[in-house]
Length: 417
Image (cartoon, rainbow, N blue to C red):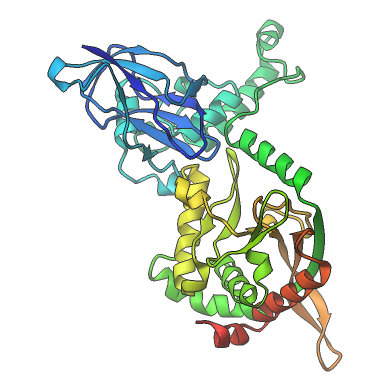
């Protein structure tokens, strides 16, 4: 008996997704719960698994197509007693397996999806690597993989494309002409996470009157505290960055200035002060901007915040952030300094009312109390606020309170609960 697999709801408000990769082919026998495809929503990568054991008789979408929620994704032939009806909708969609890390961390056991890909004669690679290959018009089957079991890594594609560029320079004229002209314009659709980011940013700047406030932080003492704690955290498998400190200090300062953790209705006639402080961390990923958030920062210890930051960072880099981790953010931090730059004008992550961008840490000369010049670790920070509910004086006083906690960790320790 042949039945259609109907693409289920895979996230709040999501009506379509990009089919990134098939893990099965027509005529292939599959088992219940076996991964059959990876799809990209405007939030993250999601793994679709089979609901029945049977034989795939038809694929309704090709790689790169846009699949519609509640529309057939593939057809499967099953035994009559195994079929529940004319069509089936998945009741559960599992997050896709973790993507490849660099070569030093590729000892993890292969997922069923990866095993299926390898056994079918296709190149073994994560969806993110396959996306990079598509962007560079590279045939993965031609790329030598250096990862576990021949898995193709991002570095392999870079080396492959550089090698082909060098070969093209030395090739005969007719061979070079056959290669893609790098000076030719290329047009591609904006979709997935990048399309969602475009819509979100346009909505934010067109409906929220932004204003920016900048200051500098002296984080010399804070970094010394982090250095003293990081080995103890590492023993528990936790990488301690500056982010947990910024989050805890922010949660403390918000208790004195709750308007920074509020919501405004569409016509700005009501403001809601939120009980939980869910701090988002803007993450630059291969797919675009993702902003997962740490829930209830005011209730978490520094160690618990650090563990959550690590988890969300890993998930964001892999493009597999759970939908719940993307929901409910109340205020955001953009660590643009991790890439470069000192000052930014961040766009508010609507419906939040404030966001801060962290610049890179610089070793700069400053005057000590006795007039001597000393080296200090300085970070520029740039706040953007919703001027409908936050005025310059409020955000300045809030930033001063946040700054005081970060520049004097002992004061922050005294106020921690």
